[in-house]
Image (cartoon, rainbow, N blue to C red; front, side, top):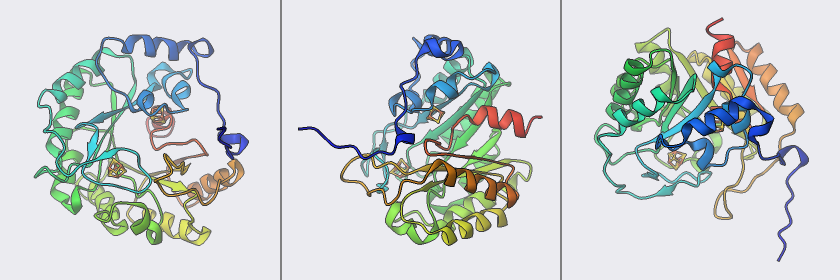
Length: 299
Ligand code: SF4
Ligand code: SF4
């Protein structure tokens, strides 16, 4: 039986190919044999050609998932599998990840993970160790950590913030009013704001970053309120992307936001004082993060 897709035109993207971009082909070839699992490939991210390719190879960006593929939480927008007792951490992962990244040709890496509420430190030390080892082996590699909220344990946020990374990201995902319907019940909007605020408390010069999905039923006023709350705690960078329903068991899309509307929100974010903002239907929080960092922070 044929399925009828009602995706708007702007969400139908061509699959990237090596021919279109020489850097993309090289990064992809170099990945072979490194035993690194990228979110970019595993989630079949449509931005892979732009993130791995691009004209500036020092800006090549990829996202790596740490601490396994099983999350202790169950957000209603996310397709990662859930279990209260995921397998134990691999103690060699920080070393092996750092070693592989040092050999790969990236300029910017985003380290993210499932939420590990089963671990006493939520995996904060594992994150920090990975970052320290990466910086030892390849100091020029820019590192962004995209962490969970550590159940509001700010000491864990501090451990990651002081590990030598360049950007600390934590996603609020949606507006406050929708948070209880969208995110796992252990996540709250206020708790996420506290995480972002605390990074600036312990490391005032750190770039902080968050991401918001549009199309879940939020109102314009709610988006404005969210942006203002984020600026109040000095968040530097915000990204907007379209929420895409992973399966029928997940929340349905309330609205496909047009590219023009995304551009309007990007402009509004800049007007509010955000350092930079990536905003578009296919934007993910790590979208061309290396290029954005190099152009807006290092210039
Ligand atoms: Fe990878 Fe993120 Fe870029 Fe997608 S947006 S290709 S997941 S770095
Ligand atoms: Fe997915 Fe993160 Fe929620 Fe876990 S905490 S279900 S990985 S969005």
